[in-house]
Image 1: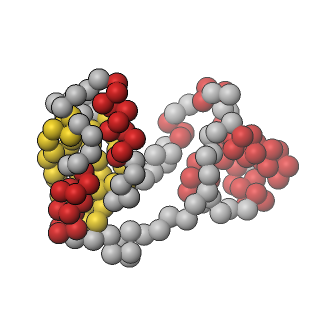
Image 2: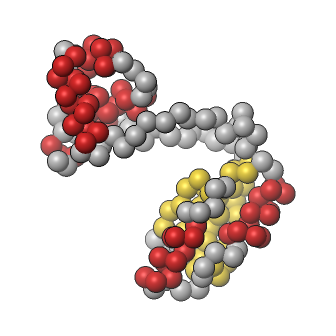
Length: 160
C-alpha cells in the first residue's frame, strides 16, 4: 500500500497519532468520525504497512542539559559508493549526532549535533566527526535558538 491509497480517515489517523501517540482508540475514533472497530482496523493496517513505525517518549533535550546545537557541513574526499557507505555506517554510531542528511550542494552531508556545551562539541568534532571515514573538511554553524522543530505531519490536509 502506498501513500496514494490512503483516504481521508487514514490521513486523519496519522495526523492525530503524530500529535498524540498515546490517545486511546475510542478517543481517536471520536476525533476522526468513525466507530472504534474500523478505527482500530485502520490503525493496525497503518502500522503493518509501515506508515506508523513505532511509538516512543519524546524527551526534552534542554531539560536534560543538552541545549547546545550545531549544524555541521561535511565535505568528503571521495564520493564513490564505497566511501559514502563507509561514512554512512560510521556516522550513525555517534550518539551526539541527532540527524544526518546527504545534501546536493558544495558539501556532502549536513549533521545536527547536540551536546551540553561548546567544549563538549569541540571534543565530539575533534575526536569523532573529524575521524569519520573520508572526511576532508567540516564547517560548523551554532544554533542560537530553535524556532520550530518537528511537525512534519502537521499539514496532512494539504497533501491530498
